[in-house]
Length: 185
Length: 404
Image (cartoon, rainbow over all chains, first blue to last red):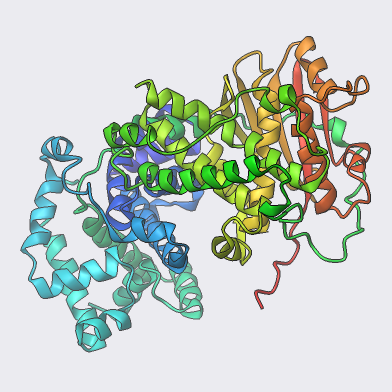
């Protein structure tokens, strides 16, 4: 049976603007939160989300259900675009204006407290599962997924072998999958 | 876990070398197991993405995203541009921008030099207060408002240049640099700052202010070579700027020329690079601001559209700003362009806006005389039914320059 995302995608393929709005309402916050986690910059994160939705509307067939769930595909797309933006900013660090954006996140914890409280859903359970992962797996996953580090970079910075990095990522992902609530997210 | 699954994870994370990525993509088309491994990797990785701390996107973002689906699927009828001849082939080397740059010491009046310096310093102080990681970006405008009063940002009043006159010759490069610094993105900045000071600012206004502030600094650095030489050197490095950057910045934006605000709607933006360097992009931006400023004051619906086409004029990129206007308003635009009646002796600010674009287009196409920009229809003003169209053309990028 097709999930909500796939149903919306089919309608978007036919130019249904209401379905496009519903898709944003269903996944927009998760996409924005992910981009913010990587970039710590609201304007950059908004650009990433806006451009991702624009690309989907312009060419909806760039996705197909064979590629997995629409939400999964969108989130990985946002992650990869955010990592690209992060690397591009890093290259221009010496302009001075960018170092602030990369290094300090003064409002990260406090600003959305009320919003976080309203998000007591399955995503909160996922966050708990992630927090419960052994530090060794969690650190490798964070460096790989949120910081875009290559396996070899992680191995070097954490003094691990390449094989250990890969196996920790695999184990971490397996544990996360097993922690999925019975109800589909 | 199989090798295929490991490959799928690495591919999804963008970690496979280019050749291996192509092989994996080919395999996904032929081998169902590869496709399944890819789908599984996407699902598992997205779970990590879902552990991100929840952050609430602004309502402004939702509005902009939904506008994407409301964009007209058809482009305007641009038949009036059919008569535009092919781009002149006078340039032996592609224009890199910054051709109108002067030194601050070239400004004859010392007042102007100090003003430009103070303005730029104020912009540097303002930037972190409106950046994407500022408290203002999170909706807390208190710090920004209290700082706005202490930052020295002096905005010109509308008509200041035409009323007082400019002692130097308006066509001289130093005066052109001064006018470019004061009449392009700055008037809209002033509008938003006043709104924030009055307690009516929104998060969307802060975002717009950030982009305006960034553009204004680049335009000033491209205008005065010794204003901030270190950052200018950075601006001069090879870095392609796509039309998409313009679309993102202008999409759903409110723009104001002094007190004439207009809502921007974005139409067609081709996929591809427009300029090769920041310093060239600053000049391109400056031209676009000039056209937006000219039209903002004349839109009868309070909105105008921006489009960037690559396939309309051979070998050129077309920037088009359009709006519904009254016949009187269109007549005023034609006068500003010097197309209806000869310009009056007294030069108005709107004439300066046109002159700035004329001179820039002249440099970009290596023309002998700025007036050729208009006579060759490399920029212009036209009307179809009840729409006024303002445009300028820019040399296309065929093969990006060699960074060395």
